[in-house]
Length: 138
Image (cartoon, rainbow, N blue to C red; front, top):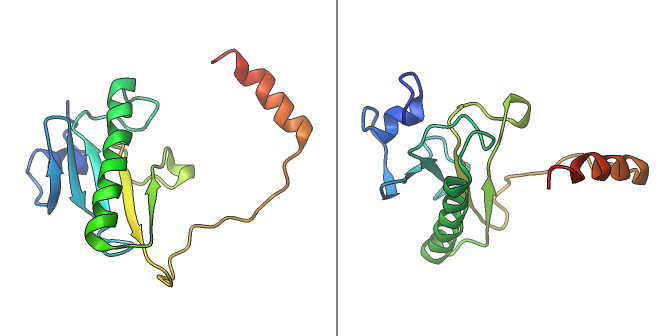
């Protein structure tokens, strides 16, 4: 399933060239053209879904199993010190391409790359309210 104006669908279909680390019937793993670090790759499900809310559960499960495998391979091949696995959903979360994708970013000591936020303080009453509202969905 592909969308005609989706850049990742075009990459999957071979209409736009990419350096591919791995590919099977369900996924394509490509090197990011604007990498955050050496070895930064993007996992692309071949099933077009804008975000995690639209992706079938079986594809979601396989995607994160693949993310673990890719992270393990990159850690071995690159001898990196750590790995970030990132997946954004929605513009407010930093998503810029609306085809679900997972970034696997090798990290190195002193790489000057940050992933931080201003730490707040959890309000127990607010947490209790969220728990009560969310319970019906589990």
